[in-house]
Amino acid sequence: MSNLKLIRPLVVFDIESTGVSPRKDRIIELAAIKLMPNGEEISKCWLMNPTVPIPPETTAIHGISDEIVKDCPTFADKAKEIFEFFRDCDLSGFNADRFDIPCLEEEFARVGMAFAPSARKHVDVQRIYHKKEPRDLSAAVRFYLGRNHDGAHGAEADTRATLEVLKAQMAKYTDLPQTVDEMDEYLVPHDPLNADRAGTLRWKDGELTINFGKKKGESLKKLLLNEPNYLKWILKGDFDTEVRMIIKDLLDNGRLPPAPQ
Image: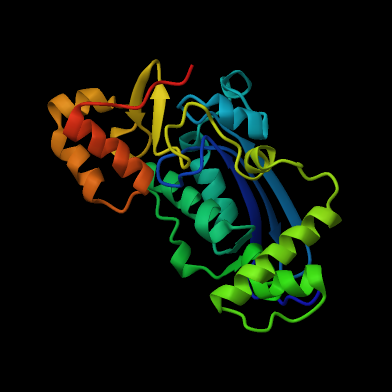
């Protein structure tokens, strides 16, 4: 590879999965290119049955449905082959440190194999991008306004600079939405089944349910009856205020917000 000297092979890879949690979700597609120190490139791609349903909202992103993978091998079927491809290699990807590498490590752990990413060197392309092209307010002022951000980290100066950057963005990108409602949806698309912005609580078949962890899919009403301490744990935990207010209203008053129509 030009300008990057390889001592060991470097595997650049990307994963498509059933969701965004490396711990809970499963790999559907794994594509990898192994760069050898002599310049040779070896490409592989595995399409796999995750053994769990692929959520429709996930299929909408990568286009892979349950029907497409129903006859594909599972990760367990391909684990040894994938492990051998990655053996004694360093790792690279875009946001790989936070998602792709932990996701792969979890899949190997499920079949009793130690991937040991800490024993390998990592080159996360996203980290390079963020180091060389900072995405803070000062960088935005330089990019959009063509000047330095004097007074950075002072609330008044930062507020004025933010407004100026917003005005410059609206002028530069003429295809941006022209109303706040449309802009909000453009920047963070809303799922009407999510009871909070982050989707920690989610409506399912008319019931408000937990959408994370070991209780995922369980009804809040049933938890109130059978495991109120779990709801109290959420109330005391590091969750968004919106989530804690919903839980508090349920514990104090037995009340939930109205289901989406």
